[in-house]
Image (cartoon, rainbow, N blue to C red):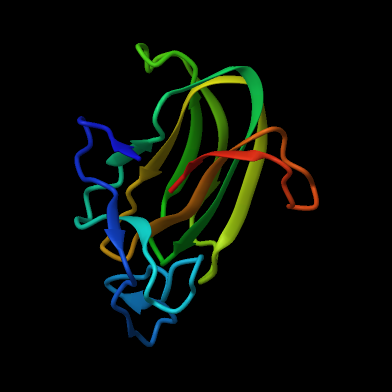
Length: 173
């Protein structure tokens, strides 16, 4: 994954976020997952963003896949995300169709606010794909804002509703 050079803060790689329980039902400080999605025991890694300042609600951080030219074949974008904490903001997904022009981006999906202390799954077929995929995480309003990504895959072929693929892996985070 490639960090955007204009990020105010970057996506970071973590094993597990330190957590201490507060009486309000949320965790103080890091409210990211206890473990990554893949291994689920605190040994594996995921990507996180966290805000640090109360005035950072307009800040965002972008991370992208490498550019792929698939001769206009279909691909399946598949990943897990975790959005937990009292001040979680927004995670967006874009298809950058022209690697030289970030203005040529197609909005694909977004999720907002606290989604519970769990990993959630998203996948979508992109027809005639060429380009890259960008994740944009928007900072929340306090240090209790964490968004995490794991098991990001780009698979050649379409996604199947059953969640099983008969495809070639093009990219794996």
